[in-house]
Length: 424
Image (tube, rainbow, N blue to C red; front, side):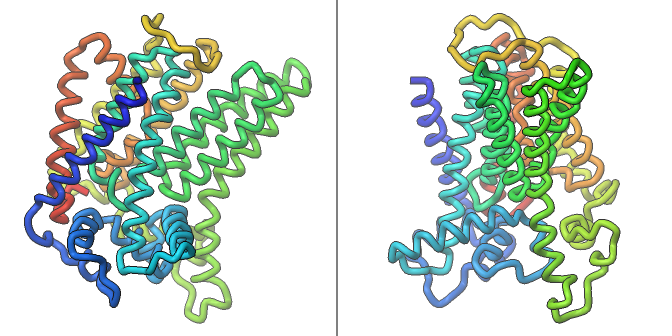
């Protein structure tokens, strides 16, 4: 019954956001969407109108890269894994005889985004049950909050946020299950969590931070080796190492593909400036060169309104991160559901690690990135959602006020997004 209520809430919220987008007047501030979807085989008018309202901002780059590959250098800022998934699913659909229309990739990407968001809601529900010792009320509230995330239409549009959240939450859930009673099944779960974190990294670069969960576990396991070389400990260390390698591959594979294209002898053109760097990463280069990311580069007076828009999320992510590290957020739940058998130290270890990762993401975004994106990349961080869920259960005013902000922000952002207006 709880899962059914989450699905119904999800559907209602998505319909509301879509109606807001569809009611936004005109083609929008920018006509890039029209140009991106222009071709010989047009979609039916009503469907093209719906797609056009959702293919905005980053979605244009994702759809174009999925349609014809990465043609321009700056497009490598947008997750290679997500564009390949769109292209793969589109190719699979065409094998069933579906004709190719201009915008088919956009439809596929929108379906992926909605599906990933719904699945991430359900996975977060089960992850919360594991971390908070089966507290069904907390899990339900946390999952519901993820539905109305301030990421808004970015979790419906052809963007990578919802997929990154799904992969991150799933990796965390598998990692928590690796502490279960079945000793032989623990290590494969650690490796699988690393694989999911690695795939998340190919969708959005902040997925790389999830690997810190495995890094801490590796150091903890190394520490336990001082008590003797037990087979279970050595296996755990080996598993965390393989999981960490999977995360690294998720980041390095797109870099290698781009390096081969722009810096190899077969490139057919002069190597780009980043090719000769000690760490020749196209991703870090284009973020600075094309998008003006970098230490305090975004700290200008003209960008002050965007910092103000992002301020509530910066505050809540900082407060909740410190709460999880400093305080003891666990209490005896009233409604307990059978879930993963974790001891309180193990639950606190995972919560503390995720909180530290969230704080790192918050600081990094504040000083190096476009500040307003915190409202959408926060969708892959569960700690601030847990903080609000616990505060809501205690009827604290901060929860009520911030939930009101989330709803208002997502609704307003939905209308602005469809008009190709900031924040984005």
